[in-house]
Image 1 (cartoon, helix red, strand yellow):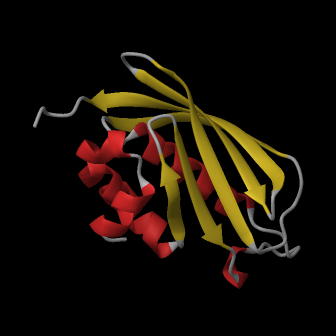
Image 2: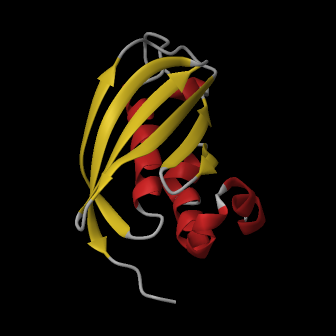
Length: 146
């Protein structure tokens, strides 16, 4: 993703942090696995992934690791926009299988303290809720003032 495309997907209140957000969106894991930003605001991030054959398990269902990957990365983008965080925990509940198409994760900020960022992430496949998660990140570094 380039900076101009990113600027159109991110609320203006976050534009001072576009470099951080671009770095997260272009992280090797996201790029290699086709995870793309849909939109970002101070309190929510939405990312999507088109399912490809290698994303399916032996039963023809989107692999749990693929689902975890987009959940984790979406919460990481939310948690790393204006600070640096490292993941502490992620609790996932899987509700139904997804057989392909596009999956979309939405991370919403639940709480932010001096040291923790907590997000609730919902994962949808073809507009049906397939999993939800609570992810907690530890704030490891405060940004330098520009």
